Length: 345
Image 1 (cartoon, rainbow, N blue to C red):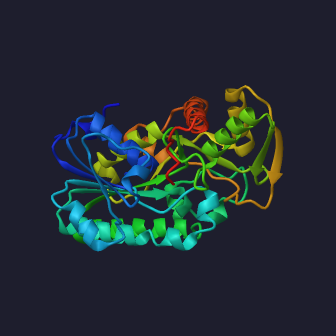
Image 2 (cartoon, one colour):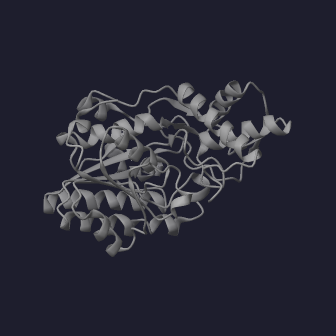
């Protein structure tokens, strides 16, 4: 995938914060594959616990909620991508709101030190959790457009941190002239992501449960909520492509933009897709006390289409098949005693 952003000099220093995580790791690999030679990958996790490590990339284990660490990594940087945050699926963000809120320290210090260091482009990974939850109370909820973040009623903890950090980016552009970009991610999934342990999101969790059911012979599955909750899910390749396209557009400076698929699915439909890929039918049990998040959320892509002439388009069935195959291989590797992406966590 080539786009405008890839045509810049390959020797500019690029910093990816949160590089030990799912999306950050995929971004680092993409940039390295395209010949960028001065990538600095940073994550709080110890290096052996990173989801992906890319040969030839400077990889640092540092906590970016500390201003001194931020100052150190952004020195002489041209572009900073901030994907660092304490987060996970609903099981994590509903239980650990303080941890999620404390991610504001990362963006607060990183954007200030980036500005001081003369960084030219600063990207912040926001989330659909920043949207007004009152608009997401039924599974058939209208797709969210960018203006729906205000009046603000974000998801407690994680969503408020994202909304406040967006404001930091906008003010650094307005008051200090720094080029900032903000994308509101909608449920990113794919290989090399979290697939067990409590932080995984719905597509990975459902794939793992189907794989486990096949392996155990227990043909049952427990679904969080009533299964009627709806979401859109964006495959990782679309996410990375979108980040780079957004950061190459002068029209999107300091302007939050949806980055998500507009293909709406219920959790029950997700389970059906995973069953079809696995070639199995399971008896469904519903845990109505489990975290389930908002009733319905979808991405309105009118704005990103109008500006970029592009939107995430990889069909869910295609992305899920790749994700399922990867999780199946991880599951079998673990059974055979080999190391997997999650075993250090």
